[in-house]
Length: 214
Image (cartoon, rainbow, N blue to C red; front, side, top):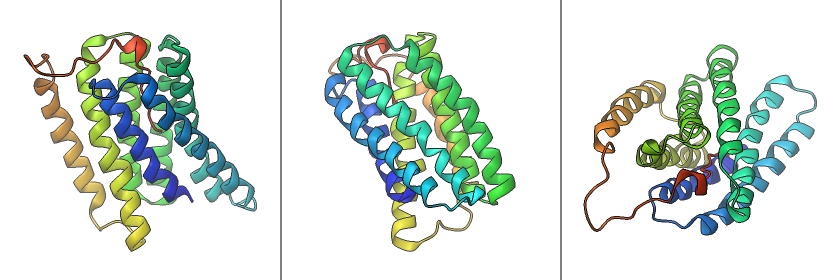
């Protein structure tokens, strides 16, 4: 069930990235956030209740709530037209915990791939904090593109591979680490200035409490 939930984390990240880039209207994006938010609260609750006290299973399921509560917070905030500060500071909380979950995957679960993926998420939620909590509007396009990229490489594609093949390819952790440094670094100069003419202009971040996730 956790893998299915991860697939739809990819969906909500993609929609929210498109929203930050100005291609999806905020209230329209709210519905996907609510759908995924409910899924990512029900799923870990079921997994924890059926874990029979297994600490490894409980630990793995507990992280899903971070995505569920973020998505619900975003969806409700968009519909109610709330200021994004609360989502921003909750994102800071998520970013800090994501570093902890990364360490747990490396040191406890022995899963280097998801150790790297949790670092991706820590970076993304830190961007949400700076954009939505601290109101640095200049990061809107950069955060939007990082969100779109992460939708695929940290959620949709890994979930699909796990559902179809039962495992991720060997060397995935190294590939993801190199990919993240190169792509997210390259996006800095590419998103520094708004493109001229014929493009969508994103709304102010106060009107766009981005996800995750997730």
